[in-house]
Length: 123
Image (cartoon, rainbow, N blue to C red; front, side, top):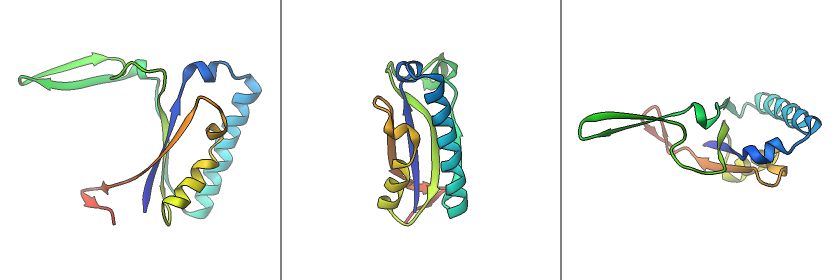
């Protein structure tokens, strides 16, 4: 089963961390990635640019409308994700707990099963 483990970021929380705490998070992600590679559960992981770099695209009355910045005004935003292939939701949650961000108040980890990929519904 495939799961997307999303990391929700709050810039104010990250800004309040010390350099040592930020370094520990980075090192923790490095260890986590290596463990997922070793177990064969990692499909991919990506970090996303700040929402201020985003473009929101919509079509209204046949016209393309592009606006800068995030779609919603919110403190938190999706900062990155892990796409994993594991036995079940319980295992995906076990993995999510090991992400360093999960231990920091104000940051969030979301686990969602992938419904389909490449046009094929997941079982």
